[in-house]
Length: 337
Image 1 (tube, rainbow, N blue to C red):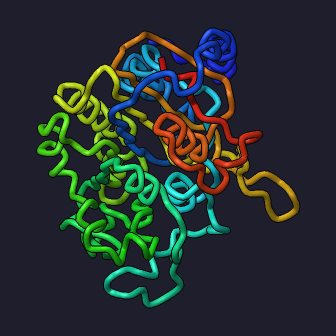
Image 2 (image 1 turned 90 degrees about the vertical axis):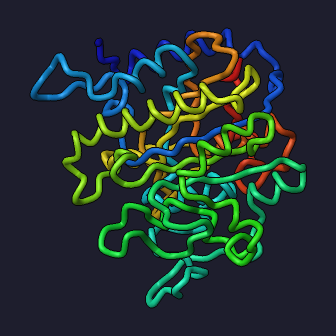
């Protein structure tokens, strides 16, 4: 399988985006959105990557094929480093000057050291509920619904709180009804089986053995990229085969940031300490439409703010935080057929 260079894919995206730009923003009726959040890999690590020791063995055959046959943002960036502020940017439209992966101030048990918490800040959850749109989030290895611990198990953080942005907001962490929507990933299958009754927005987070992040003892777990590729394959296949996925549904496969190989960024990424853009690096977002319209590529710069803006745009939700900056943060509507 040919490995595509960053420049070649960006050029392809620029050409194809011209046709995609002709469609009016929000033209598609969207009944359900799935977001699969992966971790810490650059664009060139994920698209067309082969095992260095076995050049005929593809590390990411499913994700690469998915990118070649669906919507691909060739110039997608993490908003910043490290993980947590990227997740927060996605559900609240701002990083709130957060530059750590510290545990939630609303965790149980209470954090003994420095913590991160946001009080009375509007989030995507507020926007969805105010519009009557149902939602759930699913976390692999989370032990119980609404779990507020910093990690699980206690010895090895396979489930990591830093990858669950919802529990950093008091309006969610202190709400039993909202905590009930933060579920172990085992509940995903049953919810998908509900068809039209399935949550309309579904946020899915593999654990640190399956999200390409790499966590001892699974950092050598059937090479990291291949294990993550198999997980994405399983999730996308399960979603597409379910009655919850229709011609009007979308799946986003995205990465929070790259592998710290750069601080490239765009779209109102933070700047510090002296005006330099501190982005999360060049990474990947793929958009799968139930219409299966074939390959679409876009070289428009995007990041987590753009992904949030896309959801706001197609569902007519209020623009949160940086997504209100329409000059710098554009919705990814050119990738939706």
